[in-house]
Amino acid sequence: MKLIALWLLAVALIAAGFLGVIAPGLPGVLLIFGGMLLGAWIDDFQRVGWLTLAVLAALMLLTFIIDVLASLLGAQRVGASRQALIGSVLGGLAGIPLGLVGLIAGPFVGAVIGEYLARRELIDAARVGWGTFVGLAVGTLAKLALAVAMLGIFAAALIW
Image (spheres, helix red, strand yellow):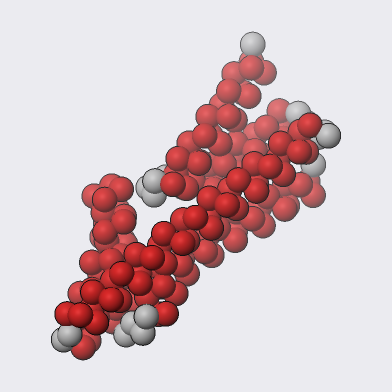
């Protein structure tokens, strides 16, 4: 019975992690990795060994890098000022207490305000905000793809 409960916990962590990858606010890939590490431990690392876990950890770290850089690169690609980039980061942090809407709108609003303060042109500020939003969306898709790859590697290791 204990073994079943541990596997259910591992699956729940992985499922919650996928939710966190799509809906910001949860540490998505960290939960996914934690569930996979728990699954490897349950099996005494027989099928999912240290090499597989190292690959999964590397993919997890890559998602963190993508998470940080995506909206910044999106804003920078459309010619954002330094103030817009700082505004994007601050907006993202300020949006955390507002949940999903805040986490999506925060970087956009922060970039728009920062760019407006830098250039005093609303059109440029809106373009930079849009670039930030697109970067965030592309980053989320990339994180989701890496999370699916992690799941595939984990499943393959369990099966073979």
